[in-house]
Length: 281
Image 1: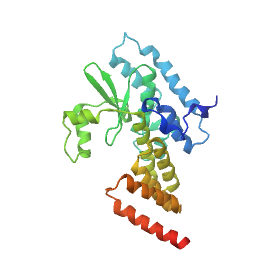
Image 2: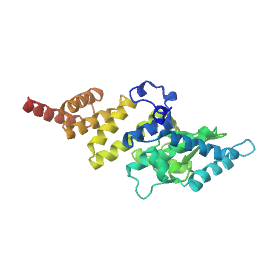
Image 3: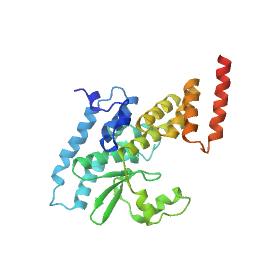
Image 4: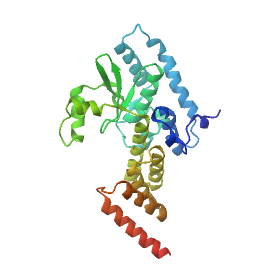
């Protein structure tokens, strides 16, 4: 079996149930768009090797804090994985092969590595689509332990979580119920969609419209009701001169979000594209 066959297929990925959509393999599928020769099996095997190395530290005789200390020391000290504080917006931070090769990433890509490793060790780590900064969570006897993969997997207190969430809630700190909802486990589809949105946003900022179109298209393959992906793919098609594709995406975007804040802007784009089409005819 070739490494290519280890990965899902973009044409069928929307049909996967959230529980069946593989996290590591689909993240590598995203990376293969940028790196067509990517050897997925190599990176899947790395996670297995990490788990084998750590297995002696995961047993009933060790308490959970000791196990977590051993895992974090191995991953962030011995293997050297770290958050890229120097060049956070480097797209390579979002491609999992580059994260393994360079040992640098952003919260969500490092979180995927941490989730996959700890699950292979029998620890039920989940992601959290926390506003602004992806986090991970682990069930413990008295609740959940929240950790920050971007900062060497350190635990995050309730007070810090509320402080981090406040700017994303109109300046109001979340109450206990709101925080509980924010800390809900993220599905694989949510995590992978967020990875693609991060890439799409970086490429929009740099004006790399071919990669904007690709990222948006992949996002629609994973979650076909992603209205922002429809709009941004339409913008990319518009910039690339693909008039029919842009018109179709803008029209579908307006159908999906009839009261969008940018409705007038998108309608103006449609008028402009109709003018271009008339001239071409």
